[in-house]
Image (cartoon, rainbow, N blue to C red):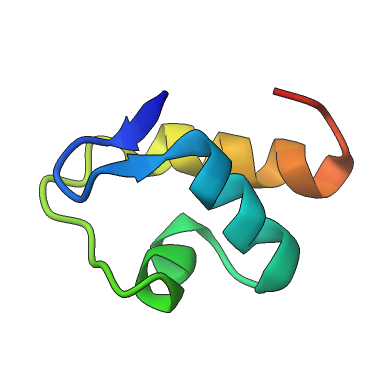
Length: 58
């Protein structure tokens, strides 16, 4: 599933980045070479990052 339509970031890619890098969703976007455009995805992306780090499956 796409989390960020503007940058075509998929949930699986965001979860992978959350395992490899520290920081919030915006920081992870930067690590992946993107930046938030409309910012509507950031809340949901932060929830996914927190869930991944807590070991909660998709």
